Length: 332
Image (cartoon, rainbow, N blue to C red; front, side, top):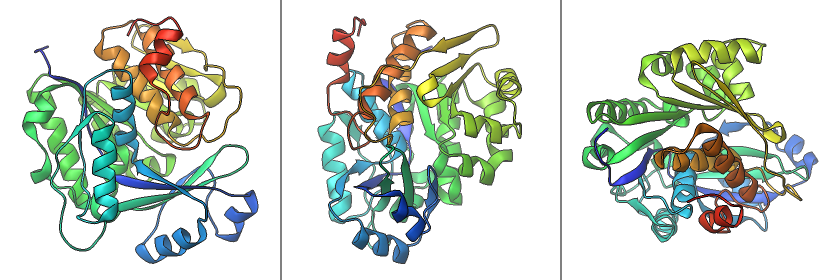
């Protein structure tokens, strides 16, 4: 593989997260699907924004969160995503660059505004997302920076991009560039309902076009239309060199054609908010993978990053993941 400037370059939905702690009754009152990501329109977004009192506001987006995690480990990360020329877009750009991630996608003028995800966190720490995609869906093939993608050892793609044709075209273009540059391609399935909507497209992409697949149990079962985790993993490992299945407090599995590595969940004293757990898991794994560490060590770094983020509100690390890894005995 050619030498690279960046460890990971990602393409994803550039979103501002608005996070509020709510009782379970709030979900029923507002007809919010628990533990899922639901797409909403601008009117619904405005309604929920008004109801999300005492909320935490921060730059977010699944792949964007992962890139800040890679940077927190001390890795070099780049990002491509679309924001608008508005206050939320400026906030996203400022926070993202402050986190050490290269981000130069030009913002767009006019309506719609920067995307936002309203995340309701219940007392059990679980999060239910209501996402207005706004300007993020207008990412197009023209926004794909071929030079940036070619400079990254691994391209990381966010499954949520499949929800709009323009963004999907950008997604495919990015993968083509990465392949031409002899780069690895990683994909996160993002959400079970996203898989339900785009199952055939995902299966086609995974088969022969993806090197690393990130999923949770519900997503991998949906992808292969199975109720048997073992069978779903067997189907996936025949299509993709590295298949990762996260299982919450049970830990995770990393499957290749020849082995399955079991990774324990890193202990957490108090689960506060699971927002970003999968995103930071991916950050730890991709950082370790870029440093050519064994799969078990990549998984351990992933578990460490996920544990850090679920111990506080918000989808991005509050403690340096590099510092935390060093304290935990890892080589970073």
